[in-house]
Length: 122
Figure 1 (tube, helix red, strand yellow):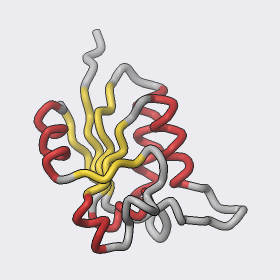
Figure 2 (cartoon, rainbow, N blue to C red; figure 1 turned 120 degrees about the horizontal axis):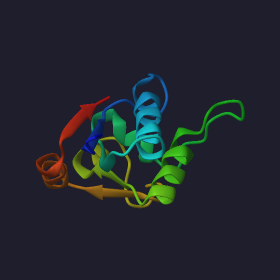
Figure 3 (tube, rainbow, N blue to C red; figure 1 turned 90 degrees about the vertical axis):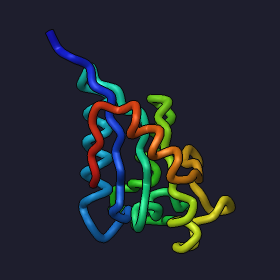
Figure 4 (cartoon, helix red, strand yellow; figure 1 turned 90 degrees about the horizontal axis):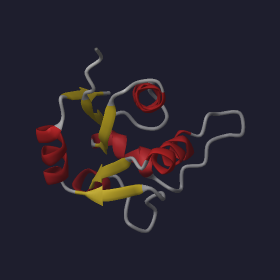
């Protein structure tokens, strides 16, 4: 018998420059499509808030991670939460926040952690 777990992911790596955010995306995608588990929230913190910058414009031959997060959220009714304090420090505002991403506080992260079986940071 397989036990279904609830996960919260914390993404601290930027959309480009490191593998952290891409690995988080791959994990989230696998969790949502190939497992019985639930992903409650993906919380972007620190440089991870750059994943929600709607002005990101990768080269044609690069994987568009911001777009991939948006599609994943839309297809699976997934919450993509961005820490508002970290976002403000990095110039990510309500005006340039990509669709499917929500600016929120650390209280949202605390709530998600409290009801999750597993928390993984990338």
